[in-house]
Image (cartoon, rainbow, N blue to C red):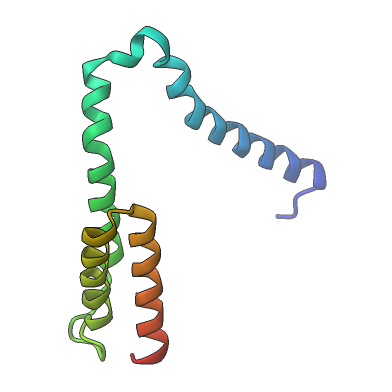
Length: 110
C-alpha cells in the first residue's frame, strides 16, 4: 500500500494530536482544586516505583542465564546502578551510568 504525501501528513498529525491529548489532558483535568485529590496524591507516590519495576522486569525478561554470558553483564549493571544510586541519589545519573556500564560490558567483555 502506497500512501500519498497528504495521507502521510494526516497520519502524522493525528498521531501527534493523540499523543498531545494523552499527555496534556490529565494536567487540564486535575489542575486547580482537583490537584489536592488524595487518590491522585497516592498515584503520584506509587506509580513512579511501579513504572520502574515494570521497566526492570521488561529489560530482564529476555536474559538467558544458560547463554554464553550467563546474565553477568545485566547483574553487574544492576549492582552498579544500585551502588551509584545509593551514592549520588540521582535517577538520571543512575540510569545513564547503568546503561553505559551495560553497553561497555557487552561491547568489550561479553
